[in-house]
Image 1 (cartoon, rainbow, N blue to C red):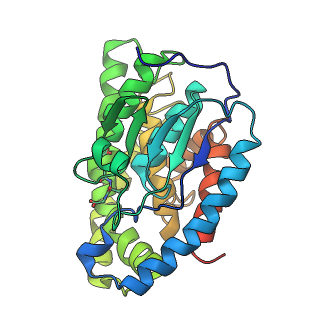
Image 2 (tube, protein in one colour):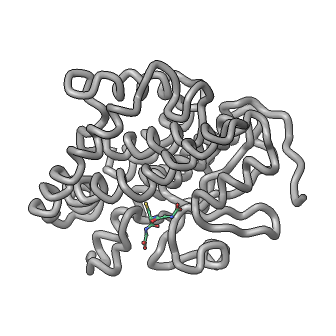
Amino acid sequence: MSMSIPKVSRTSSSISGAGRIVLPLVSSWMLGISVMTRHRLYARAQRCNKECVAISDSMPGSVRSMKVYGFPISPFVRKVHLVAAEKGVPVELALSNPADPAAEFLAASPFRKIPALVDGDFTLCDSTAIVTYLDAIQPEPPITPGDAKAKAKAIWFEEFADTILIAAGGKIMFNRFVSPKLMGKPGDEAMAQQGERELEPILAYLESQCGDGWLAGDDFSIGDIAVAATFRSLGYVGLEPNPETHPRTAAWYARVKARPSWGPVAALEDKIVSRALGG
Ligand SMILES: N[C@@H](CCC(=O)N[C@@H](CS)C(=O)NCC(=O)O)C(=O)O
């Protein structure tokens, strides 16, 4: 095993990096985003990054930690941070510029997808692989239940979030938030509306699955983390669960947000995103 987990506060997610930022959800250079726009965006994020380094330096438990490369509006990056926070594993967020990717990021994520993990000489990409690693090195609290059926359900809901919910919601988020607000390019409204149509039965299904507890049953799991992480991304376009139309989903989401892991991860994200938007 390449690291021992230091005893730290459960709120010790930290942010670090050297003024590098990844544009999430889609690669800016593929969309032909102008060099000027990119530079403006990176400059804003760089200011934010320096400030977040200062914050993390003053946080308890900012000792040796693993690096997670990514940008916090990505549900996959957020999933990793929430799992780390649930387990009290300190992770450092390294923002990276895909137009000039750090060698360490490329080595960890050869296909330039975020998140990527660097833990000493061990590198790994893909959020599911990364949370599996975190769960193996810090088994408590577990992210999948012990019961066979509940365990399988937890994995299903993670898969549902990562491939079904984000596939529809991402069309809306990209075209109404990422492209116009972060990249300075108009989004494709027809594509966003297609995402809305696709989302309707997906949200109806989820509403039918939410009870008084957690998605996989009695135990909080990676299924809850992945679905809630995706809803937080959809919140950028006003698509967090609506208590009027989807009351059970909204109540479940409120329970996830009330967990101690959520606040610090959300607060750091707010800070970084606000700076990236020019705040
Ligand atoms: N299955 C991967 C998906 C990762 C992914 O698609 N990340 C997006 C950001 S949300 C990304 O890196 N996009 C940049 C690109 O495709 O170039 C995971 O779970 O980590």
